[in-house]
Image (cartoon, rainbow, N blue to C red; front, side, top):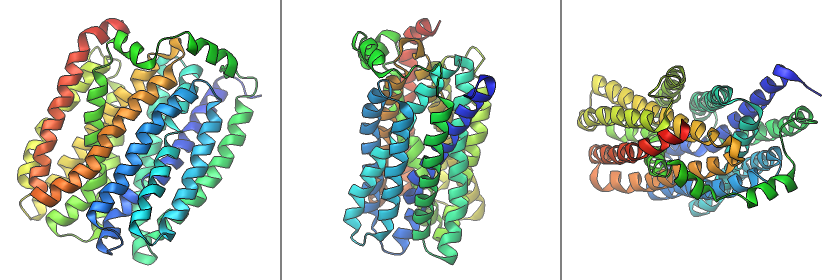
Length: 412
């Protein structure tokens, strides 16, 4: 049996590797979508529906996963999620009818949902709150590193093979990681102090209030609307920036995918910054920190909407930076609202449930953004689309502000 600090470090490492693999298999379509559009494999409307399908089922699956994650052994849920995602990535490039790609990616979305709430529970019950926040940073950074590697790997596949190779690679990787994860985590948690007694947890949960009532009493309920706005912006920018860059500035798909590697790089930097200041009075309160991050993003998107209509090299670079920094702010907001907030509920035994509810709201926003941005960009152009982002950010700032007073009392 693995003991002590090494055991906790190994738990964090295994969760990080599993989340790394899940992001690799989740982002495959988003990364190569611009190439599939260029090759005529799909059209923009179907591309938006495929992305929305993943987010809708991911969001719905979060509620199921969050509920089950507080009742069942979380490592089994994570293993199932990785294996089903591997099958979806295997099937996706083999399907010729573009409309059949939608349900396949919807299933992938549900499978992906089986990862995060169980991770929240494993970490929250293994570590103190401060160490839990640090562990969340490590796991989240693993996802961004996965995205960076995918953005670098996809152009190579497109140039020397085909975009389909990205999906096949993801399949093999998920299977290998899934097997290593379930074997290693079972050995690490054998005889562990982490409580995984199904009957006991079920009995405890039945005596408690629902997750939404707990959120209401804590003052965190308005934060769900802020999370929806954050999800709209984060995944909207990540999903559509390569296409925006390609169409607004007339660049080829390989270049558009490659320059998008700036997104996860800036996001990783922002996560370390927000973690460093998380101990301060402002950012230790997730509601206050979110107001600041939404406000910064509003300031960034205003010049973005103006410069996007000017096709020259300086404007391309500035727009790319503005988009990347805005996305980084939303990832920092995600860290506060999705990673830190559920950890506040660990003592109530509902960290997985709260994590599932919060993450579900993220993907309500994401689902709306994938299809909504596609429709708006086709009808009004990219400049007007970026202007609409300012409104979404202002709503997110307002929702975070409304939560401050009661949520502050709760965490104190």
